[in-house]
Length: 558
Image (cartoon, rainbow, N blue to C red; front, top):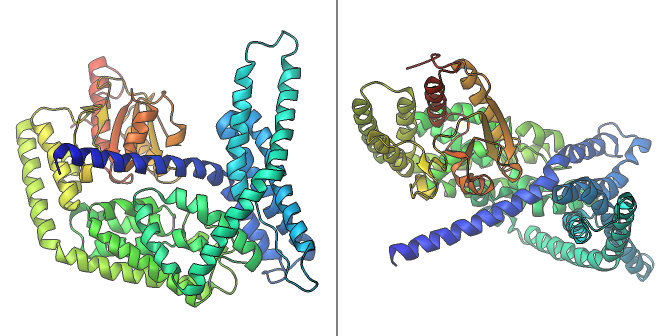
């Protein structure tokens, strides 16, 4: 295969991955803001149903209407707002009510045909219906408004706006009642049969072959919020718990990886792994262990085997959660564990962590000699860089430590960056410049290298977990450096606009951030918690301030 063919193939793979990531982000955007409502429903169930911690017949009446009406309508409203703000949210909510009513009507008709004593079908909770109808209804409203934009006579704008939205909501509700409800019921039947088959045949652990690598490549939102949460919620409404909530949320595989680096890693990976364990296991931010796997792809075997072990354990003990555990913190998982599932769930976390740890430790031990050699090679490259620069550099010292731990791929990327700096090149390459990072991921890039930095945005898939953590770290560095007038915040990539001067993302997400704001400075990092790139950003701001004679130019200088 020629180089160009390989490049085209890699580009196609990246395009598919980015497309799936964007789809997953969109689904996540509908689900994540409503996770508190799902948590509340899970707690209401845990406390007040007849088998709950404090049974209460009156309060238990909240359970059914909340899951059948409130939660799907919240999701539909959020999806509608994402497409067309408040106007889209209202139309989406009404239209989704049509889907819910249509599904109930179909099931009631079917149950009426059953012989006396036959088990009747239960209600289908329209999570997937809301995730389809919400954005669809809002999009149709948006297109309709474009048709008569600027053509309505003065004084009739409000009348047209109100009635057009009301009439469209009616039409979409009827469409949902007669058409979409049938389609969604059919989809739920197929998916439910598939899950039941996997459980009955004992093959459910095999889903870890898909889920665990997908998590590492930031495709977890598409799987978790697009499939597992709707199906799990349906299952929990019937059985009181669902194993599906644990397929992606189990922190055991990531815990095993981080423990293996703690005992058998080298360089900064070994040094940072213990801290990452706390953030991953108790904070529920799984993204923090992804770079450890990506720097040594063979570790995918460890997370797959660990994940499969956890799923198998939950199957043996018939364990499950009452509601989604999001974030996937051990604390959140315990809060949502069904009363008869604590033993199974706790064992699934422990055993999956143990299996991942043993496999990862074996892999790290096998490659330890090579890792130490590459660590030395990087140290030499950075030492030469500092010699060329004529003085020590905190940023390069951090880069040395990071690169030493990054294994073969990461080290080569770091060394390349160091070498580039040594040659006098800016650590920020121009957009479109083919600079390879670890595993082919993009390295820092900017379209406007001289752009003044006043607003820094950390962006991740959901904009709530790892990016918030990175923004907090950067705020402390900015404060310590004595700079004022610099805003540091965090967002979901889908919500990025053109206001940011500098955007920091994990490498796998940089290309998407560049599409949202191509004029900003883009910085790729391996780990939001501890990246030498942060020092480079601080140094860059200091140079800008020094050139302008601004505040903070003398603070914390090398």
